Length: 101
Image (tube, rainbow, N blue to C red; front, side):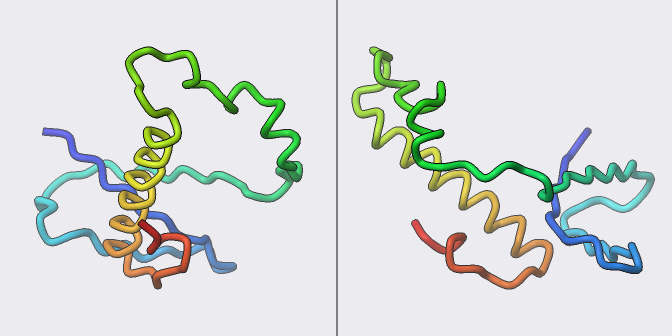
């Protein structure tokens, strides 16, 4: 059985991270993978950039999605819920955007 537990954290200056896993994670051998994604250096984006991107209106012509705005809202709610779950598991403090439904 393979199970993935995602934890989001900031790497402190001493580069030490303590991991406490949920109680339902089985004990025994495990592989730990650390993915470091830098937030620095990302160019600033504007609303105009978004409007001109391929993402804006991407569901407009889909016949299997009756209300694309509602579909997108539901995807965002589900994503924020997953992120909030990982924050709780990681013991991180709640932040305003993560508590919105």
